[in-house]
Length: 155
Image 1: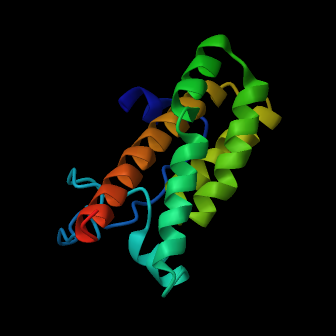
Image 2: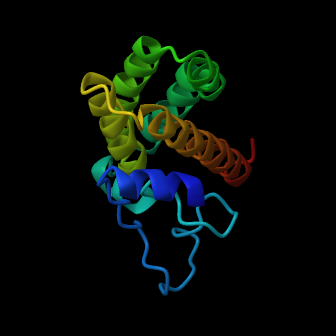
């Protein structure tokens, strides 16, 4: 994290503000992943956006897990190989998917990565690595949320 922060600050990129203030009380909404961290997905925002459409949210989360399940490993491979074209394709798709999921941090990193590729920025691979890390966290968070939904519904 320290290395990434140093590179990002050297490029003029400022970290996104956290979704939940550091001194905010811990609630089930702020720890949706169950790991004590601020969630990647804005669960209250997602609930509000799709109010009354819980089954749709479940389908959205499942389809994201299915579609992007191998993307963290694919991003890692592309980073090692320096495959900027494929990183760009993944970042472009993650940008809109992150928006649909109310995952602001993912959306912003995907946007920054996509832009860095287009401008041939030297920090592109560092941004892609940060994107991979956030995507991994999102996938873990989404899986845990689905598991809780299934437990609550007895299935």
